[in-house]
Length: 544
Image 1 (tube, rainbow, N blue to C red):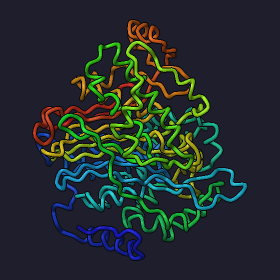
Image 2 (image 1 turned 120 degrees about the vertical axis):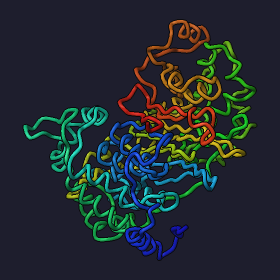
Image 3 (image 1 turned 120 degrees about the horizontal axis):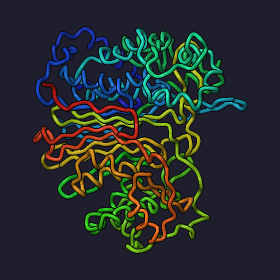
Image 4 (image 1 turned 30 degrees about the vertical axis):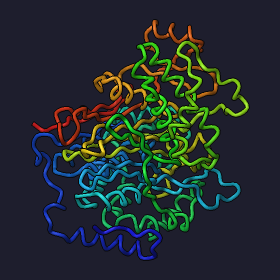
């Protein structure tokens, strides 16, 4: 297998050669098949935006693997949901490759530019998505790179309909976004009004950039003529970016964080996507001495709130302002540390974080993110979280490119702290069991743990686990948030134990796939769901 060599001055030349060889190859295994080529179980996709899920499913139906489908989902989202997944943004993906038995995390989060000049009106990030997707494809992809990018290019060139999720993102920031002429051409109708759900959107400048990515890979985007044009376009709209920033950007393969789950292994993304550490701590406390499994229905909600409170309180101690971690991640999820965190748990009393007031900070994590999960017929899976660090990033497109720019990740409200994909596999049998990812700001890791604990500890069907009301506590303020469909009896149970309750319409959006019998062992056990709280889509797991 050809690999990109880290820190090699020749890596970009190698990258271009890979694309040229791929374009000239005649191996049928590399050719994009026809939809419907695979019969029976083909896997599935769950995403926050429906068109992206459908396009990913087509790739699975044509014989592509989970990574091929994930790349297709991404380049579709770059067109249909640029508010959260523009080429200017970044993210993290976790990959389980059934063939090699590898499970890895890929960090392609957008970075802070090396220098943000004084007076910069809209500090923008170094884009990560194009190169991140290429590195993912280079290691695990089956179909040709260009054929996958072409799907997004076609949608941008010929047009696609505006989804409900895009319009929901657009309405709150419409006034600021309309100050940008390039954005107005995309998001305003000819009569000057904001586009509505179902409106046709064409993005010709973006199509040209995607065409370049299709033909040349990301080399031109990061250090060629396109890169120079992109940097000039960023500067013209008040952003901050240099050619050196683009040339220096490198995605990073990382080891995942793992905990035991019975006979299985549950895997979390490592920092700087610190939602993985928060999730790992929560789950470890839930499993400590079978705390969650042995609890009554009411106590389960009490436990979910109490573990979230302890994990987020602990986060204030180890999470630095630059998103690095003060302690070794393995120490933070060790049994001894989790035992200390949960050691003062009381079944009949809420733990007050007031004595930690001097440590805790009142604030929000970046709520602008989207997630998706993919599983294929062989049992390989991908779970991704993407962010622009703010809805629509800085609210400007790089002049003449159609690329919305992510905000520079300079604080928790504009950073990757809420990103937390999870994959569960059995290391001994090599069977896949669960993949999940969530969005929705600070409550995203909690939402995902709410779901996976119901599904894999309580043995609840996935649709019920996702639909079940959620609770969340982030330490400050000392309030347990709950969704309105939580029963009055459970609310009373929590109040009696000292919880101060506040209703909130939605606590996170989760996309998940759960194969209770393991995959590829028992494909009929697989269920794929997109959160009913959102406007996404989960595709069927088989072709008739």
